[in-house]
Image (tube, rainbow, N blue to C red):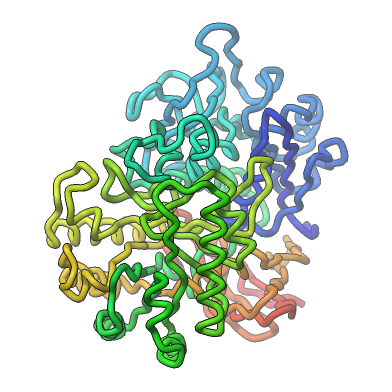
Length: 588
């Protein structure tokens, strides 16, 4: 098999499938860069020419079922999302009509007994939006539609029938809803401040959608894990599909520590820096106007040279319009840039103000602030993945186009845990640290994401209302024990953006020698880029070269997939050729 890209992705956004293109972002997040992308040109696609064809809900609405049948008859393999009812015979299922045919804002229950979902990271997931109800006939079920969490129905949500797999829900739409909330709850719509905490924050966008019992599950990530399992299962008997892992150097997870200025002093910052450096970690600080004016540029430059990072922490009032918010964020960012001589790339606003829906990330992108951290747990929540992800999630606009801005949601906040303001019991440092350890264990062991808490320097120094230094040191110690690399905001954004833009090309599989070849091209230097390789021909890869030089490989237990990790450094703009032998025999 010799094709430029072994995976075909079809999308066709329209009014009924606005966020269809988010499916491509899902593939990139999961590292399947070796795909050919066909947007709104469904009629031109040669489905059977690829190892697997992925058909979005919008594309399925335009693709005649006979085209799909011809693909399957020719040996092709399909993954389809929320197809029309006439696809039923291909899928071994029948679409219900009339009453009870749609499950709105339901759940899915993953089937633990199917071999593709063995040791799945979490079995119960929310499915916001419209899940279509299908009756099963001959398909194997990987997940069930569920009316309530943990209460599965008799109807499949994800199933496989021969070489065709189906999701009865629109994964692209579900991911955007989980990661960005409901557009109709934006602060400039009909129900501003939906949770009535007196502030315009990102958590307003999720009012009525979040499930408290699932707050510590990065559900968007787990939904994508299900897609990965389906792709792996369908292609297990074919040429291996390489993936780019989420983190550098095959790390299982990362630690991202930051905090906000909020009446701090330089001495507070010195204590924080000395503490994190004791554990070999990095810290990112977001400065209010007072810190921007008070801190010495040369001192900030010295800390940046040691790997720490800085950004703005604007105060725009509790309930600003998007226009007033944009003006103040722009003014503070400009003041920051002029004072310190560099452009910040990340921020958190004071009181985590985030007006609008796509308005805020659009403004941030225009200012060069491409990593937002405002998705924090607020009223009635002390912790959890507000946007359903422990990975950087790209924002989308209302027209379904991706924006040049990511959200890295904040999972714990010391002021939310250590005060009664969120209407939950105040936690001791020991209780908060116990939760931090559990979250880090879960991220390193099964979810593979970023542990991102925030701690204010004034509280770490013992001058604020919430003492938290013991908790902070405990987080640092546990991350060190787990082997989690600590990153600054700038480091993490640079790796994320470069990895997302890396291309896998010149893919070829030689069955006779059981040899895989492909090339990696990155827009910037990438150190420690990790490629995951699945088993093939009944065995893991036996040997590999990059640029003609032998590369070490290691087995990793991620996702119960038997992956082998191969780590390389890629120079900006220079294709790096990789050769992977599954037989151990050198390529002629």
